[in-house]
Amino acid sequence: MRFVKRITFPSTFEIALLLSLVVFICALSWTKPEGASFLVYGYSVLGFWKAGFWDLLEFTMQMVLILVLGHTLALSQPVDKTLRKLSGTITSNTHAVLLTGGMAMAGGYLNWGFGLVLGAILARKIGESAQEKNISINYSLVAASGYLGMLVWHGGLSGSATLKVAESGHFLQEVIGMIPIDQTIFSPFNLIVNLILVLLLLVLMFWLSRKAYRRKKLPSCSSFYMEEAVEEDKTGLVLGSLMAFLVLGEILANRGSDWSFVDLNFVNFALLALGLLFFASLKSFLSALSHAVKGATDIIIQFPFYAGILGMMKYSGLLVLLAEDMVGKSGPDTFPFLSFLSAALVNLFVPSGGGQWAIQGPVMMEAASKMGLDIPKMIMVFTYGDQLTNMLQPFWALPLLTITGLPAKEIFKYTLYFFLVAALVFGFSIWMWIS
Image 1 (cartoon, rainbow, N blue to C red):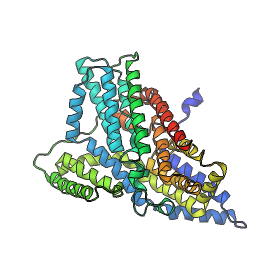
Image 2 (cartoon, rainbow, N blue to C red):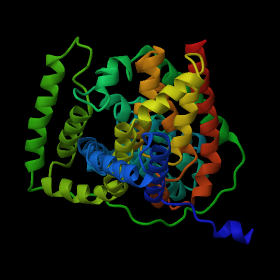
Image 3 (cartoon, helix red, strand yellow):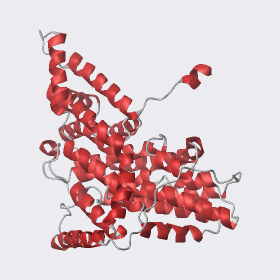
Image 4 (tube, one colour):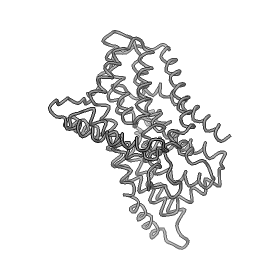
């Protein structure tokens, strides 16, 4: 037991380094030309790593912005006032759980960074309101429900994979082409899956909220930033209005189209416009932004290493080799389900959906193309696996744990239930598709 207690789980950056080493060894062992020395070819593989290191700079910046802008929006005064009003309406434990979970999922569908922070802040405010009114609530379950945005986000409007493949010139365009969001996010397949998922999660939250629980005193927590209004500065309002006008103009100009204009750049532009409008003050917006950007540290440092991994796989031929191996060992009837399971597993080690898509997406799409599978559905299969295991690992839960003041074990004893229900929904949906 003492030995077990001493074990520390590696950080996500350490995992990125470990994955880099594993891919280097695989490329060196499996793709070395006959007659070449390991030393010389090892140097070549390192060159592939260096060649790919900066290939995803645009994608990296897009991922940083989609998190930071969503987080900043959740800290704005209009959102804060709305959450205060909602938390003041709480009358029971069931009300508290369903409201928090419902709002977290709604926020997650709009933007994963926004939903993550919104769910955490709402859970904390509900806890404070319940304590003031002497209403008994299961605070741990309320906080766990505030994490549900991370279970639905990749099927929503900020999905890394779905928005990236909608861009012209994305890194997989030669394999799968451009895929607009009406074939992924707004496809009947994804809409039905998410409708069933949300309904079952609401039923599950209702059932859990009715179970007996031990009432606890609201834990103390680290303070979180909330912007202060600067009345004399309306620069943000003017700039935000101009940007919002451009966003609305593009939507109107493309009405009736296949929504191919909606990609990561469009979503980030809209988020920036909305953030500036909500803050009105440019000074307040920048102050909140400087706080939110701290949460993007891992993305900034890790994505170049993911790009380096992709470079080794791509330029050594390992990518094609793995895809052909998958095609040989599975078939159209089994590959989608195996891809879902592998995406769920890989997410435990590469918690960034964008980083995981950069590493796993090329292999999956290459194999799926060779099998003649429905590519948009295969992209959604990846997204379901990626978001599923967020309920089991603490990487993205850190902001929620900080704001609510709870240890990880207090929320994961409930997110395990969310994981099981979502696994059944996703697994059954994939089985229905391939059967």
